[in-house]
Image (cartoon, rainbow, N blue to C red; front, top):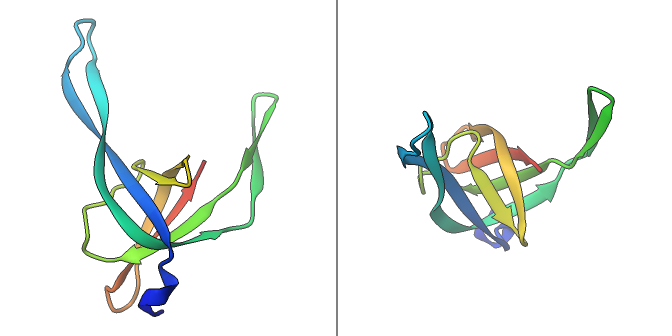
Length: 104
């Protein structure tokens, strides 16, 4: 995969627990971890059902250069104004690329 494959600009957000909120929890803020060039592909969609409701799932596969930042599951990828939650993270065999599978 050449450098020309990365044509989409994505933002990666993480969550940090800041301070006690006064009622037994913590205040969580969304922090920008970085903005990167990536290859974004739409995967086949699916449906999940929970307690009489059917939810449509539109997963995406985001490939970016490895080693940019420390990405965790449940972080957020923003692409074209939509937020996707990272479900799984992989690297290729040569540790060149980080491949994130995410869903809305």
